[in-house]
Amino acid sequence: MNEYEYAGFWVRTGAAIIDTILILIIIVPILTAIYGTDYWINQSIVKGFWDVLFNYILP
Image (cartoon, rainbow, N blue to C red; front, side, top):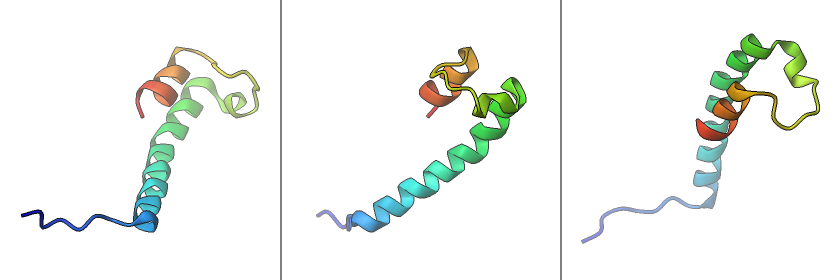
């Protein structure tokens, strides 16, 4: 009845890496445009509303 073959560990790991890269391609330019390049140097955990939205809520 079930005709699906489940993906193995490495296929799922590869998919997770691809998903992470795609999210980074979207989020990095947006956060750099909003906060500037100092965003990547600053050591604080939360830097503002848009940081929380794009890094915690969106993904």
